[in-house]
Length: 294
Image: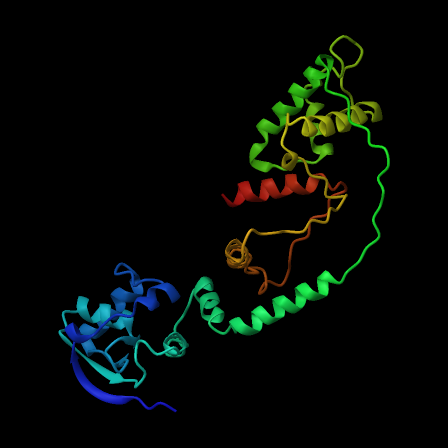
C-alpha cells in the first residue's frame, strides 16, 4: 500500500500537469461555473484539499484545483506526494483511482472502464472465438438457373420520377418503406405507364405491385440507393466486417458512447403509450416527436 507523504506548500511553477488527464477526462474550462465558484472559495478560504503529486512532480489529483488556484492569484499550493512516478506502467490506473470521487460525464466513465480491459485476455478470447467459428460447416445450396430483371422502359419513367421526388422530399427521414412511398404517391398519382391514360396510380393491389417491382429494378440499375428503402416487416441478417481492428474499436466506442438515453419519466406516476394500427405510421410519429422537441 503506497502512503502519501505531506509536502506542505509547493510553488506552482514546480508542478507539472499530466498530459494523460486531458485524454482520460475533459480539459479544464476556465469559463465553467464550477471552476469560477472554486476560485471564489479559494480566495476566501484557501485551498482546503491538497493536490496529489507523483514522486517526480506530476499531478495525480487536482488539475481543476491547480487552475482555480492560478486564477485566484496563488503562487504556492498545499500538496501531498504519492511515491509512484509518471513513467510507472500503473500511472494511468493510479490517476483514475485518485479521481474516483469526481463527477464525470458518460464518455469519461467509459474511458475509465477501458483501463480495466486486459489486452492479453481479450486477444486470447478473440483467437478462441475464431477457432470455434472456423469449425462450422454448412451445406451449400445450388441456386440453379438465374434470371435477370428487365430494364426500366421509358414508359415507366413518369412513375420512377414520382418515386424519386418522394425520396427527395423526405431525404431527412430515409429509409422509407415501400408502403410509405405508396401512400405518398397517392397525393399526386402519376401514370404507371405513360402510353396508357387509364393507368393512373391508385390505392389498389395492381398499383402497389407495379411500385414494388419498379423499386427493385431501380435499385438494381442504380437509379435509387439501396439504403433509401427499408421494410421492417422483413428482417435481414447481416454481418459486419472490418479491414483491421482499428475501425472496429472506433465503431464500438462511437456506438457505445451514443447509445445512452436517460428515462425522464422514471419518477412520474404515469407514462405515455401510443398505439398505431399500421406499422408505417410509426416513423411518422417519430418525425412529429422530433419536430416537437426541436
